[in-house]
Amino acid sequence: MQERIYLSPPHMSGNEMKYIQEAFDSNWIAPLGTNVDKFEEEICAYVGMEHGLALSSGTAGIHLALKYFDVGPGDYVFCSDLTFAGSCNPILYQYANPVFIDSEPETWNMSPIALEKAFEWAKKENKMPKAVIIVDLYGQSADYDALLPICEHYGVPVIEDAAEALGASYKGKKCGSFGHIGIFSFNGNKIITTSGGGMIVSNDEEAIKKMRFWATQSREPAKHYEHKEVGYNYRMSNICAGIGRGQLEVLDERIMAKEKIRERYKKEFENLPLSLMPISTGNASNYWLSVIKLNNNSSTMIDDIIGELESNNIESRHTWKPMSLQPIFNECLTFTHYYEKSFGNELFLYGVCLPSGSNLSLKMQDMIITKIKGLFK
Ligand SMILES: *Cc1c(COP(=O)(O)O)cnc(C)c1O
Figure (tube, rainbow, N blue to C red):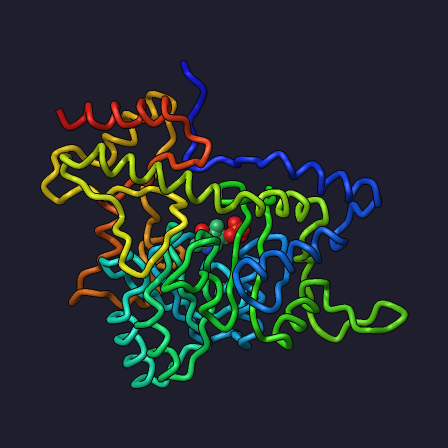
């Protein structure tokens, strides 16, 4: 059997070892160090933000951002429903209540209609959220021209979960720069990786300072160890940051490679009863994952596709299962795009993520395409 094909495996540039070697040569095998400082600067310059904070994960970034907005027991936080649990688990770390917001059909991201409904409820019930977490799904920006004015109108800050969307942009502005605080992930499956890690970006220097303090165990400035607040061990290691620096050098190349893969799937599947995740005008995706959605009349189902690919040692996945359908979150309120009908649930029932690695060879693409087409004969 041929080697396993993964959804989005790591793809090294070859320059990572240079930065790791520098860390070894200076013996900065530690959290913090030159690579960490430089990686923060380089990501900020790329995204067009002033301040960065490199962390052990994207989830840690969301946790710190929630803490910065003073989210605590009994508070409410709005969050995209169709996402990975890393977006909203930190709401529970703070003993607050998530309220989930459905997707819209143009980009599959947070629906402005559903968001407005949620705010109307919150106003009526006197349960205004402390923050709104907006996810940029599968590498495509949410519709910020529609979403941000709603949040501004109600005076609630935005945390942009751009974990999947480094390098993508919306109307010429890079993802990660739309909220008061933006978050990236460098987990192994993301468009670039540090093996594991994350970053917060913001133009608010005070916010970054405060989160940096919490992320390093809240050590007060003193000669001895002095603590007045709870802290976390959330910093990125100097070795991991070295990997990140080597990866960032090839990010734009990775995006181009992934775009080609999406174009190929799109062309090859033209006559099948399915469509690719749409990309709306004004959006430049990073094409992190190519996702297909079967038409409701398709007799081939997603489990047929996933099973067929798996039997050929090819990984594919359902789209995210909406958070409101997860047992741990099923008591949480959800606001839908349509009247009493979740669009995200439909995406979960009919959507499949296909292998989209920037190192996916033409031969591998051929095989995936042939197997899928075969199911519709
Ligand atoms: C990967 C991911 C996260 C979590 O990032 P980690 O670095 O794995 O903690 C959060 N939100 C979304 C949307 C993600 O895809």
